Length: 250
Image (tube, rainbow, N blue to C red; front, side, top):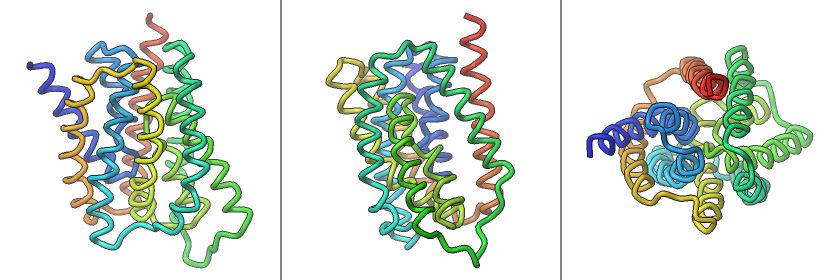
């Protein structure tokens, strides 16, 4: 009972950060479930992906009501994202959990470094066809990575939308919040079918993350774009340490 309440509270914090940053919360939730609550990677991943769908629904409603986000751009990125998510779920069901943790940790270190030193979008920059091709390829990879690691894909969507499509961090977060629902739904269904979902854990995590996402989306307007990017990078580095240190110490 106490553990369930703690997980719900952690999920609420993850949901708030997830909605503010457009990352879904899985990149925060999965390492904590694995490192502090001794949840196995398979169940942590599937619970996170199902919760990401809730984050997407809750956060997107607020962002759309406020007119933030770019649904047109999101629609172009949906297909490669879905293809990657389905392929990643089939791959993830067959990978050893230590490999998943190590890959996750190394990947998010690279993303955090890139974001930490990224410049804000410039008004005179306009994405061309080559940028769109790279963005679609990146989203294919994001779908695959999100399904394997259980993180929703926001760790890739946000930098891609900022750096390749010249959007502000808040618009990127709002657009990513919309996109992550697709990756989460496609992947979670495959893991559930494979018997890798703990439904009680998923319900607790999804409930906490839903309320957190509502709060995060509402307060995001008062957080600066630069602060969003820096906070995102710091959270990534902390979670990378948790995951990699656990693999090394085992």
